[in-house]
Image (cartoon, rainbow, N blue to C red; front, side):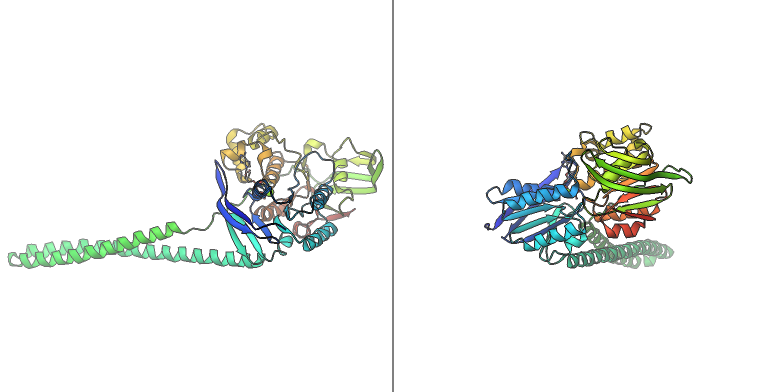
Length: 457
Ligand SMILES: Nc1ncnc2c1ncn2[C@@H]1O[C@H](COP(=O)(O)OP(=O)(O)OP(=O)(O)O)[C@@H](O)[C@H]1O
Ligand SMILES: [Mg+2]
């Protein structure tokens, strides 16, 4: 048990962006809170802030599992961290992207564990299936603030959609009104000009009419002037109203992955392969061929040896293999490993890309990074270790794209990325014409990219 927790004025800002400001709320014992938001919005940081602030209650946190040099597989690391966390019997449990790396079986048992846990639970995730379990409290970090919603995820989505629709309708109708007011103003001005001109003409035709003409003209000018300023005022009001409402800006990634055209040939071939470590065999009877335009999905439970197989294809020295193996050189493979090991964490995005493609000048590098949503100086110059989980995926992909590979190997590429990046990536991979090996537990992703072959381990 813990007493109600008061979060007061939590803020997180960087020189180039505000993640959230003055976030205040209360957490009661047993609350289940789900944190959502795009990559880099500040979810992991918020969890860290909670751990650091409330040291007087027993909090356990299972952090987002991204790059370090632990030899354990992603799921093994997560399960180890989770059982360590639970062994403290915490009254509050924080989980950051807990379903990354988990196969169907491990997912189910984690969900059961969540159902059985009675303490306070805070989970940051992009996983739609997991989010469907959210029935009570959502914190959405977006557009520099945190919105709290009480209800389930689907209701939140439809409510947000409705809200956005009504805002954009409002903007549209205000813009129409403003345009109409502008046209009325122009017409009115035209009218004023004409009637002043015609008044002058009338007056000049006869002296006796001068007085009458003057009076009439003055009256008309006065009322027209009033009409003009009324329309003008209305127009200004509309402009003000318009500047007061806006939809949160959604900047979508627009990157490409190019491939090196190899003609029609076999890129990878393994005949009667066996792989293992000094003390144990991991897989045997491996037979696989990947053509230059073929996409192969490797599927299998946690611990079945998917990543080991990929490492063997890449010629990892720690893996002992026998049989007949043919594969491109490491430098010709675009490899996104589960822990983004292709990134030197001390280097910045600009440094990483310029080393990958030394032919590019600074402008070309920035343009390339821009497509991957690294847009500001502060984003491209910080060391990669400061980037969020999803930002590291984007940077890994940017690195691969900076030097077109003969073979693309993606290990659990949908982990950590937000829904917008995921949609874009699916589109890109669907069109990708070259050789590709994907490892994934994500059925929805596999259905969408339509592999030619499945290899079940
Ligand atoms: N020293 C730093 N300089 C600049 N930006 C930084 C620094 N440290 C962290 N950031 C930025 O803070 C932001 C928030 O990071 P955080 O890890 O909390 O995001 P997140 O919401 O968990 O993202 P993801 O969904 O990718 O896990 C990111 O954009 C990250 O790049
Ligand atoms: Mg995170």
